[in-house]
Length: 420
Ligand code: IMP
Image (cartoon, rainbow, N blue to C red; front, side, top):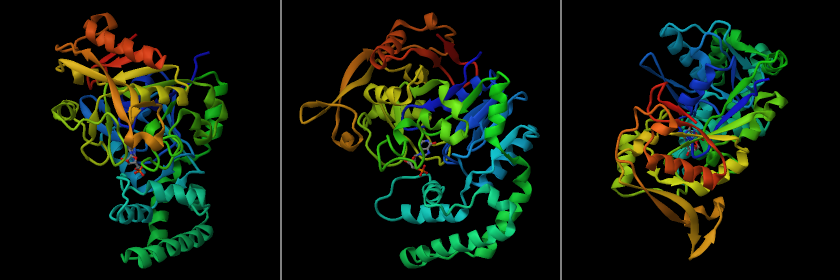
């Protein structure tokens, strides 16, 4: 029986997962998101048109794929409906193809407002300002409005009043900003629900049916390992567990954890927002990577910080996710570099230290320098078509992480992929 696959980011997000999920979606009949929210931005090129998906799984462009949003996802109905509209306007039907868990916690405009007000103060994290943190806080604090609450107006009204009261107090006393109106929040929710209700259902049951019928499922991770709320560079992280192991909770289907795990990593490193980044480049090499790699956030448009590939962090991710293979993306971005560096260790005060998030801001990278290939690899179709220097880089990654590289992306288009 074909095994299910969990696809996760191994760095600080933006590893190019969209294209890779899109590629794998053609080979699975079901794709499921299991954590995060519309802070994700998965870019896909379909018939030369660019799509950025934030909530809807990347399999949506294939007729045969059923898409699921599990209850680990924090759901903005505004964002969902906007995305549905954009996809349908391009002539792609979602009819019968999308199912969202009734147990999802909702992200409301009030969460985004609170996120923005906090980010405008000191100690900013550099969030996407979309309300992800406050919405996950509400879930843990047991005051979330769940999608199923939308089915009962009386219950919904009470929960909305309580939630708006809770936040208006903060808005008033701490931020001195404009309060929210509970009636308006309530009416907007009902109006959104009218349009979205047909998409809600029991995701656990559907995944179980698909699995029991012998079909494999693709689980689409968002953000990256180093942004995991427990194992990432806390507090400069997102508010969900981004690791492959969170798939059982987030999808509601426990057998999902017995899947293969493909980790996606760029051939270099980027990060948006604040937080430690040992291999960050402040010289021309950094801006060269940013320009060639078009390193601007898919969700927020913010420029990304760029640096060399950090193998220590990648090995940490490989272990935490129990990776069975790796996909290296954007290898072509390094085409014109005469020399490349990869980080193979960290030092603090001359002493070698492991990846420890609380020490990372002090860690000085130790590099291994490799020869570049100084030619275009765009036309390469097989591993053997790659210049020997590019092959060497891949082999160094494998040896250091002890994970085989099964896939290499050498351009933005769907078929710019090398299988190994
Ligand atoms: P939040 O998820 O919006 O709360 O942002 C927390 C941190 O995670 C910030 O540094 C964001 O830039 C980062 N982040 C969240 N989502 C993504 C993503 O999809 N790609 C890259 N970084 C992300």
